[in-house]
Length: 137
Image (tube, rainbow, N blue to C red):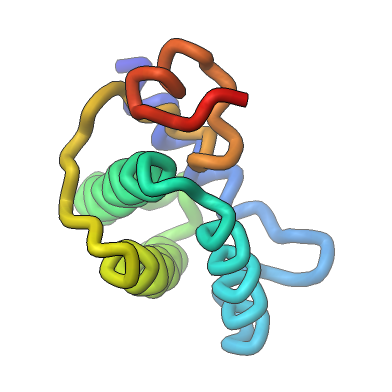
């Protein structure tokens, strides 16, 4: 049950309007987020890109699960909101896949746990960083 709680919390956090406007509202805002995401990906090691791919896949799976669960759907802001988040996430995956292809990385699968609240550049657990093969530092 705690995994479902994590999903619900993430969806709730993402459905809360940002100070500069709602996510999913304007294409130019999404383009800004994609550009920022790309700059983050550029600074990632190969291992970090593999973690990020697993993290993003988990996020997409969560959104798809949410879309099939009425209670989760309602607390995430409704079907339209969840669909918008899903479509945005798929665009982020396209960007990530581009970076992975450029580096010749294939699907590495899940090597260790993925922390739902932490992107690759945010991962703070030293044991997980080692398990994924992140550079020391």
